[in-house]
Image 1 (cartoon, rainbow, N blue to C red):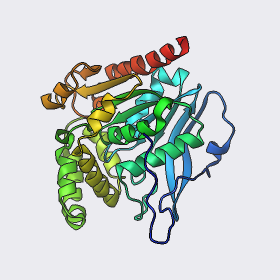
Image 2: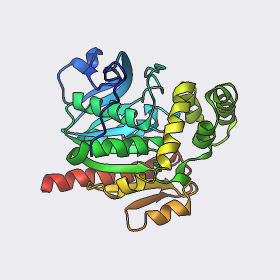
Image 3: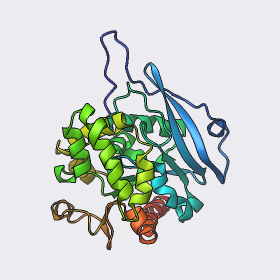
Image 4: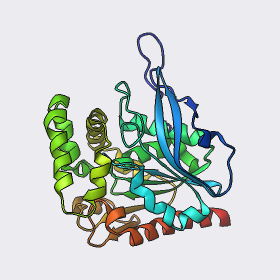
Length: 305
């Protein structure tokens, strides 16, 4: 099922269209084998505004792996992909979602999960990505599932890294942010969150602190509201179950609730021992091994078929 059309305002205009314009020279060059654009930038027209999307992109093969980061994170969450076997065979794309990292953060953008998915769909269409593997972490799992519905048969595989599927997946950070009004969140909760993360002794919190420092508070709050809303709709688990492409749920053994795992019985899962929510940072070697197995396995099966 494709994403619904953007809403129409009273003047009959589409507020949020999906036209795409590429400005960065690195993105407008003809595709070239073995090209690595670590600091590419894309401009996506969005109604009356434009979104500057920061990318890392490596062109290797005809299939594309798109990495979608979580709440408060950036595309750097997935830097390890460029040291994996994926980088030798596939085109890799990691983007900072609007409001996060080095991407733009206009106040008029909604920062809903739906619109984040529309932005990524416009990006993939501009890049002529025909077969797409999605690797999605946390909030990115919700964006990825909505994107997967629009990709339909273009979806090659789906790696869900503790992406929200149930109400229980709404963690303390997103839930408290969503429940607070924006003024309270901006003045008190967001600075407190940054301080707690900065003072944490957990290794994974050091990079998260750097990424969080780049997040726009309005985008973070609006994203939290939408993330919690989607987590409580009761649709995400069913969307995930109905994916026809190969899929795998990856989680940290100290992070995911048994309630969630029971709902995933019979589906491919991979536990990362002694890991928390940021499994990519806690156990990079086993994590990327699982991603390689899932993605390259799907590619191999498709080529044989």
